[in-house]
Image 1: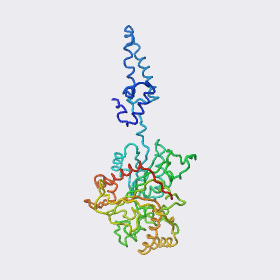
Image 2 (image 1 turned 30 degrees about the vertical axis):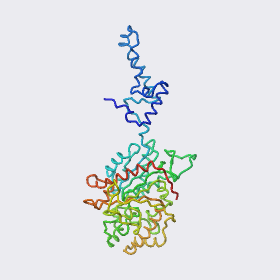
Image 3 (image 1 turned 135 degrees about the vertical axis):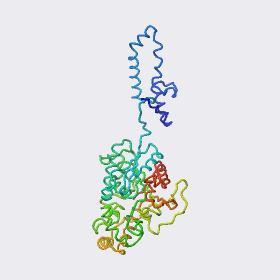
Image 4 (image 1 turned 135 degrees about the horizontal axis):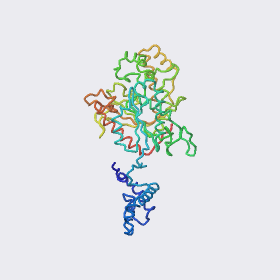
Length: 456
């Protein structure tokens, strides 16, 4: 088997410099660094046998050569143990190349890790070796029908397993598509631990693998950097054009909520905000604040950056309003042009946090929910949704969000917008390549940016 090339060929200058310094200190303080770190650790021994008396040459050749080279081998092994052998044919783990940032990819409804094939490859190419990119597999296909809460708990368990197995992780980010964004929001609340003073001993459940953290807590014991969603229904799918394939037809929007659970189980009830008893707020409203069930808003606030990518049009699954967490009057038609270098990115804005009271579930909302559950009509359905939407927005806007609007109106077949934004299939959905490139560059830029904390 051919030996692998010396490791220093691919090292950064900083690594080479440090190794040169080590070599000088261990071998010859007066020699130059270039000669000290020669490609072979055996170079200083290569001519030693030439100075032996001639009458012993045959004896050494036929009887003692193995002993001598065994002695040299022991010395070389000692060099590898104490300072590292940069010319060893065996692969070595370069600490500088070891990933310290976990990026979790979460697929949408009826999805699987294969949905990220193109995106994962592009992220690896653009982000480099410092990122460990992991596509979640715990909620594949019909498991997404078992409820956002159940799927979120499974995702949290899966992430913790990855963190336990991988040494050296310090940071964590999430990139989620569609329903995966809601599942990820639930999961981070399970994984969230408040920030504690540095001299406070961590218990086994909150043991941090990093000495640095954000000002607002840790996620899975790691510093939380990016929380990014692609076409996620943060406000649910109930209401006018929130589920676009219903075409905004009042009759279809009225009958959809009671039918949805038949096909999509508990998840359908949660997306249409009809889950649970009438007197209890729906899950998505609870997830817009901190409550007994979880510190949902605090967990989101632990991330340095929160980014929403939303399709302006042609998304048959998720409406523009719900994926960008905006009210109807806040939607502004974007320009026709794209952001330079990122095709189909048509608008980008940062929405700072808005100070407000926590969302609540007033008695009139409970009455409207009961009516929407038991006797759905266009009037009570609209009334209930308007109350819920405003409360959810009020809760989520207590954090700052970067909102990125995407438009595929100019492509030959724009009706794949919901999957284009992720490039679910490179053959059919490659129009979203510019969006994926923007996501990757955003993550790379924000990974090294200084943190500006936001307190709730």
